[in-house]
Length: 225
Length: 316
Image (cartoon, rainbow over all chains, first blue to last red; front, side):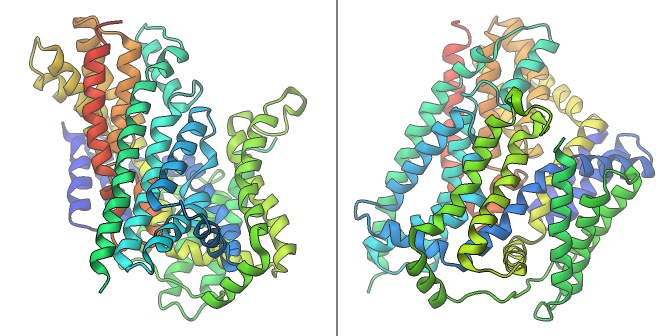
């Protein structure tokens, strides 16, 4: 049971709103020692794991391009484009993005979206512009809500689309784990059973996005003098 | 063969440039902390593969010591104002989308092309998508730089501006992945599985299914990653109860079990790259703003997954 103290460190640290980097590092060191490693071995294990996971941070290399295009008015152009489409509302726009993101993820094209490449430079400004077209200038907290919903739409569409594709990491993990336990399943058998949840996700989140439109209309009507 | 090592050199060069530019930016009150943090990160990228593991560990601890107390500062690289951007957007029009869309387009094309037999050996097939994504960055720069008549240093400074808005959170996903590895090495998963199987009531199919789906979600929230939760919960509850005792279908259990874990991913700050990083990138005041937007959908889907698994897993 001793290794579980690391989990305690994580939960308490996050609740106390300490710096997450600090919390995670302390949790790793404590867990290692509690699991019977020596101090040097713990630092080695953590260092090796950090080194081997550098690929997670490689995506930041996109920032110079995104920054350069923002400097030249990419977000403004995205806003103008959506502002011209009168039928576009925040909810409808996000639902359209959700469907495209989920459908492409289901075909294995998970790298077509993403927060740094698509959400910040394109989708979030468009979602804000759609609300501005209908309701005029937005108060800051409404802007924040719309942005949060843009990121949420990207995540939810990705998570409940990608498992329909047969060669995605999570499907291969399930297959590999079952195989270790003597159960042979084909990836297709697994991905077929991701479809019911994908449909429910589309219905549930689509309904929430339509409700978001109504909520925005209500809040912004009240906010206007 | 182009693989991860080449990408680490590119990443390391970018982070090193950020460190140097931060050192020269007097507008940032914490500029030396930024310099040290990104300099250390650059060292990890450039030399990490050749350093002993202990040295890599010390680099991480030094980075945390710099950023963990009082955080990092934000530089103010020279950029354009609102009026200039509106003017530039009107002048350039939809051409501006071209470089932005070149990134996913190259990522997509490369993923398929580099796996073709004619191009075998050029790019590590396991990393084809990541290599193509970074290649897309260079394609986009090649289109955008002449179009905007930008100076060579401009994209780096603009990249630093964005990286500073994300701050230390940029490293959190990688750090959490490393924590997961330490958890695995120390036997955390086995301990959780033991507890879970002790607490379960006998005999009820619904209780077994609910314990598995909710267990997947909760353990994913703790670990920040459904992949870490899946082997533990499936070995602890899924296989022994749902499949072996009650005769459930293993494919349905596995597929819906993983998706229940994803519901947990939507609700935890530990899944930093999906929840904390976008909050920073979109400059939200509430670090948990994205999670708040996701919780209702996540909870409904968790209940739906439980119902779906109960309805389907014993039937096929």
